[in-house]
Amino acid sequence: MNRRTLLVIALILLLAPVRPAAAAGSEPWTWPLPGHDVSQRFDKPESRYGPGHRGVDLAASAGDPVRAVAAGRATFVGSVAGTPAITIDHGSERSTYQPVSSKLHVGDAVAAGEPIGTLLGSPSHCAGPCLHLGRIAGDNYLDPLELLARGRFRLIDPNGTPPAPPAGGSGSLGRPVGGPVTSPYGMRVHPVTGVRKLHDGTDFGVACGTSVHAAAGGTVVSRSSSSAYGKRIVIRHRPGFETTYNHLSRQSVSVGEHVGRGEVIGRSGNTGLSTGCHLHFMVLKSDRAVDPAKFL
Image 1 (cartoon, rainbow, N blue to C red):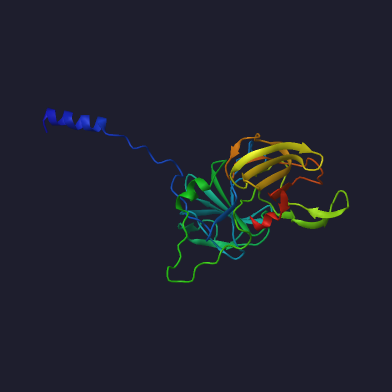
Image 2 (tube, one colour; image 1 turned 135 degrees about the vertical axis):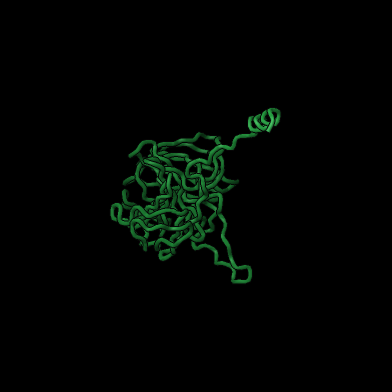
């Protein structure tokens, strides 16, 4: 090989674009449950022990098979604070699953999509059965949807019976927080006044400081504070259709601001006429309160 040829090869190598190394943990994950409706998104805590949501909640049914999101090895199979849980090490990152009755043992190798256990109905911090899926790198919690969202497809038999629609409401609104429903819409005796009256929304039992998310995209039309509803945010999604978020400890958006579905608009609290930390969520149609469950 002559000097001229060597110079040409060197020039080609110098000018060729450099392909960056793949980021650790950047391989897409497979969805661990069929359907995988997200009922609560990731909300990174402001501090190591601060409030937040350290994963995503996927609504499902008790008894559904739970599958590994990627190939790896089980490093924990047991209970965390009384909740059955599994941890799988994928190399640079780990995935966690709870509450799950496991068929694995520590040290077992698993493939992506391989069944690792069965979803339990309880204990659950959701209104119904759900899988809490976590993603951890070192001591840092990361958003699982960054890897899951790339492959969100459901395969159905084109010659078979169409799948049944999801149970519950229309799904036009997303849940503003996780946690159980502690008081649904309807008539009840008010826990503070003792008067029997309409409970004009749905209460979700969550700790003070939990991120509250917009149930749908819209415009903030009110940011107020009152003796009854406490700190309150009202979002208009279309003419005659609004959602309200009440008893907040913090309001993070301003009147006139446009927010997207799932965007954090405040933090849950105990302001106003309230007996404890929770979110009172309302849906208004033509300024009249209706049952939020019909839309969630």
